[in-house]
Length: 250
View 1 (tube, rainbow, N blue to C red):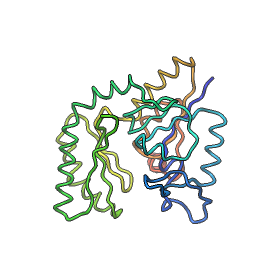
View 2: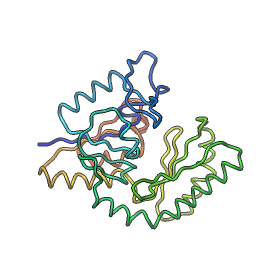
View 3: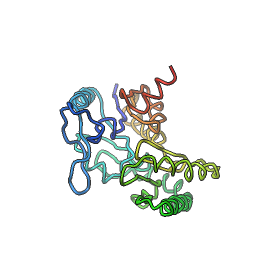
């Protein structure tokens, strides 16, 4: 039986230096657009990756764009899910056009609302005198979501922004927009955009190719939980956001 691991990347298979322990044997794993290193793997993560690759096919399932995924120095060779599930790439790197068409129909009506919340976020940050600005995350002709990071990594600003702007905006919108927050990363996403929908679609594709398959999900954050539960088994890294949530329910 073919085995597939749908795997989140950032803070799962690698992380920024600030999240690494001083004693870790670090190896560069991902790069900024200017070529400088942004994230590293530890020895334990490299051993984990090697073990998984010997037993199953790994499918990156990430919020990263296609361009950002190409700056990841890990040996993936199958499908890939990017942009929180907005774009699926085939093993040859070409996008899945059927999925792209589906997402286009679903996302296009929501673009105006994303522009609206971006404007509200930027207006608030300007009023506060903060340096950050929101970004519309778009690729391949589709607008996916709004992303905000504080350039000075002042998460207290994002806390205030979340509580005073984003959450009230979400409460006023019955169309199902939702919030993703993990540290210095805040995103507002439309309801049609999530990794789980892409995983379910791709599992159907894989079953058509291989018959019965076994699937695993590996991720660290709250936003990964839904796609992980769409798999047969879920794997959670120790010390992650999801691990903390699981411990809190015991």
